[in-house]
Image 1 (cartoon, one colour):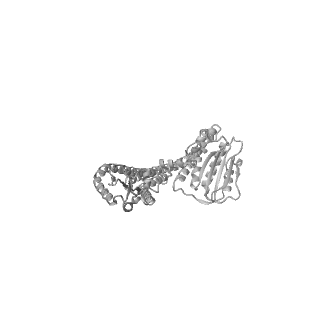
Image 2: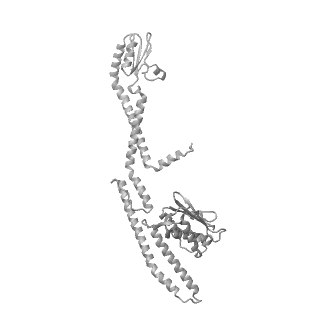
Image 3: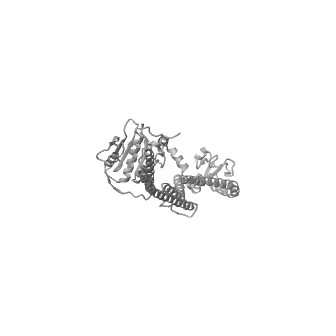
Length: 430
C-alpha cells in the first residue's frame, strides 16, 4: 500500500538514479548468496562423509561415557558430564528416568532417535540417549547476535565508503557538466584518477575547451561583423537623408530610413547581447533610484504617459548599471505599449521589495497575451510569436532576450506569465 508521505517513491527514485546504492545492494546480496551457498555446500559435503568417519570414534567415546555412569545410571555423574561437556543426556528405565534438557523432548530435537547410534542400553534395562547440549555461543545469544550485526553493518559501511570513493569522479563530472551547460568553462573537471572515469573526465574537459573556442570564435566574428557594418550603415543613412525630399520619393525615402533604422537597432542589440552574454561582462554600477529611472524612461517613449506606475516611496536604492537598466525598462515598456494597445486598460508597471534588499519590477499589458506553449521561448534570441510576426509590430526578437541578460547580469532573473488578460513580465534585481 502506498504511504502518504511519499517515502516509497523516494526510495524507488533513489534506487533508479543512484549507481552507488545499486552497487552496494549488489555487493550485500552477493555476499549473502555466497555465504548461503558455501554453508549449504559444506554442510552437504560433510554431512555424509564426516558422519561415517566420526562414527567409530563417537561410538567408542559414548561406550566409555555409559560405563562411567554405572549401573543403574548415576544421575549426579550425568549432571557432572552435562556441566562439563556440551552434551545432553536422557535416561529412561525401570529405576531412573531423568532428562538434562526436558524442553528438547517437547520440540523433538537434540537427541538421537530410538535405535540410533547415539543411544545405548545398559545391562539393567536403562536406555541412555545422547545429543548436543548448550553450545558456547548459545549461552549468550544476544551478545553474539549484536556482534554479528555490528560486523555486518561495519562491512556495509566500508563497502559504501569504498564505492563512494570509487565513484567520486562521477560527482565531479556531473558538477562539471552543469558548469559547462551554464557557459562557465573556466573551472575544468578535476582529474583524480587515471582509470576509465579519469579518462572520461579528461575527454569532457577537452570537449569543453573546444566548445569554448567555438563560442569565442563565433562571438568574435559577430562582434567584428557588427562593428564593420556600422560604418557603411551610417553612411547609407546619411546619404538617404540627403536625398531631395520630392513628393514622388517621400514614401520610398521614409521606407528606406525605417529599414536603415531597424538595421541600426539590430546591430546595437546584437553587440549588447554579446557583451552581456560574455562571462566577463562588465557592469558600471552606481546607486540608482529605480522609481525615478522608470518614470524618466516612460516619459521618453511614445505613449509612455499612459503607463500606470505603482512605486512605493520606501524602495531601497540599488547599485545598478544605469544604461543597462534603462535598456531593460525601455524594452519592457515598449513591448507592453505595442502589444497592449488594444487592451481595455493601459500597461501597468509595479515596483515592490523582494528578498533581502532587492526589488521586483513587473510590467503588465492587457492585450491578447501569448499562447502558453510559447511562454518558455519568449526570452530566446530571435524568437517571436506567430502573432508578432508582422511588419507593423517591429523588432527582430532580441528585446526580451536582452531583458533576460540584463536581469541575470545583475544577479536576478526574468520570468514571464500570462496574466489573463495580457502578459506580465517580472524582473528581479538584487
